[in-house]
Amino acid sequence: MQVTFWLLALVTLFEFVLFFLLLSFFRRLRKSEELLLKLQAGQASLLANLEQNARLEKDLITSFADRQQVLKQLDVRLEERAAELTRLLNQAEAVTRSPGFLRELILSGARQGKTPLELARSTGLSLDEVKLILAQAGQ
Image (cartoon, rainbow, N blue to C red):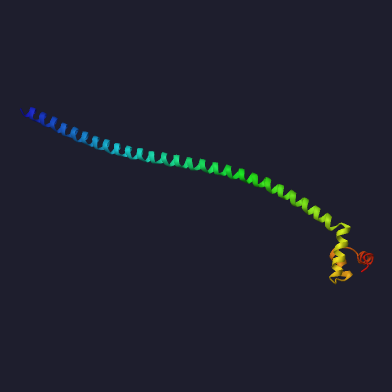
C-alpha cells in the first residue's frame, strides 16, 4: 500500500511539475505573441514612414526637374539678352566713333564753353583734330 501511495504521490508531483512547466511555457508564448505584435506594429509604422519618404523624394525630384527646366529657359533668355546687348553696344560704339557724331560732340561742347583741350580729352581726338573741326565750323 505504501508503494502505491508513494507512486501516486510521485505521479501527482510529476503532474504538478508538468503543470507549472506548461504554465511557464504559455506565459512565454504570450510574451512572444505580444512582442511579435509590437514588432508588427513597428514594421507597419516603418513601412508607412518609408512610403511617405518615397513620396517626398518623388516630389523633390519632380520639383528639381521643373526648376531645372525653368533655369534652362532663363538661360536661353539670358543668352538672347546678352547677344542683344552686345549688338547694341557695338552699334553704340560705332555711332560714338563716327566722324559726324564726334563733330557734333565737339561743336556742342564748344557752344557750352569747353576748351579745345577739354574736348580733345573727352573725345579721344588730338588737340589739332579738335582745332581743325572747330575751324571748319567757323568757331
